Image (cartoon, rainbow, N blue to C red; front, top):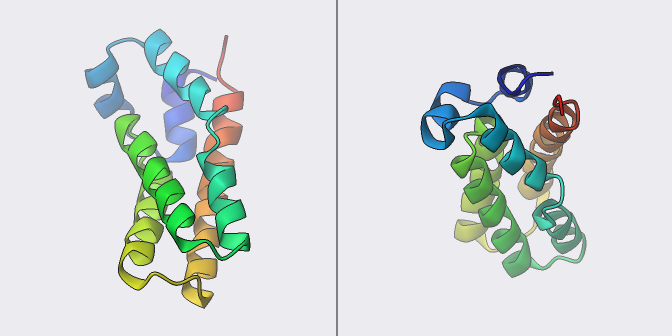
Length: 118
């Protein structure tokens, strides 16, 4: 899978990221770093243990990573969860519902990155 195809698969903005990073090789390098980022697991663990502050921090980090790499769809769901946690300071049914969207977007993103050529 090419970098452009990867962006199409996970709902990202290829044109935006390429305007910043300039080459597919550089974009791919940074995308592959997402595979090793522990923020998603921290989010899952923090919600499971009802740790709102850590869940917020993890969602905020995911939002930032996605923004920097133009991973649009996953970034939007992470941002929505981040802002809900910022305002409500509670892990409730709404958080759990939003988390399901984040999980689906994360899995789609990670699976696409794993299929990158090279």
